[in-house]
Length: 228
Image 1 (cartoon, rainbow, N blue to C red):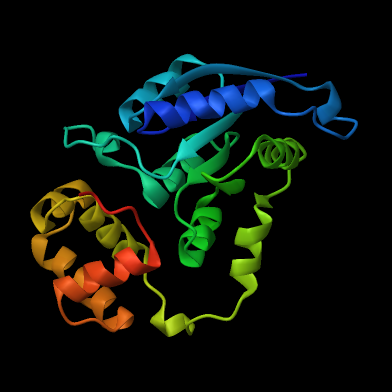
Image 2 (cartoon, one colour; image 1 turned 120 degrees about the vertical axis):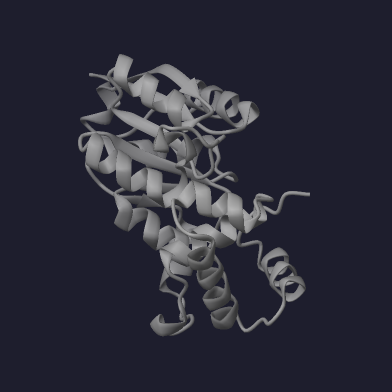
């Protein structure tokens, strides 16, 4: 059995690294996957490039970076990444199995990603052995989360009412990428007022009252990468 893979991530070095790991990972175990051959049919850095790839190639499993190279254009897909893109892909390509490759270890993001339709969530610390396990699980129709991340999901945390909403998380993530409120509003197709409200509610839930405190907390928790 041949499984066709594709890789989408904004960083070329990540895409090349995943490709190298796929080529060098240990053999998979199990009756089904032991007879499986993997081939990478393409890679891309942007949502529009991913759409072109999926339209021109049959892809069984997609390695998807949480952040892609987005920009504003008449095509809304060009500005879409993160959970929003995963939901769109799950609706457009229901047979596509998505393995999310993410630098974020926040438990809310992991839950939201899986609820959006992803079949696996692995970090950038993943080794060939873990990659092999993830692929084995996905090929067998199972959901895979790294052991360390799985443990985090079962640890006690904040009450549900204090959890950030998907919109609030997207606003914070885009702020960390260096976008201002107007640019975020354009990408999310919301008004500046609505985006500002999401930001203020997120700050309230996180117990901060200023932008300085917000960025300090985000940097400390490493919830997102912060552009410098």
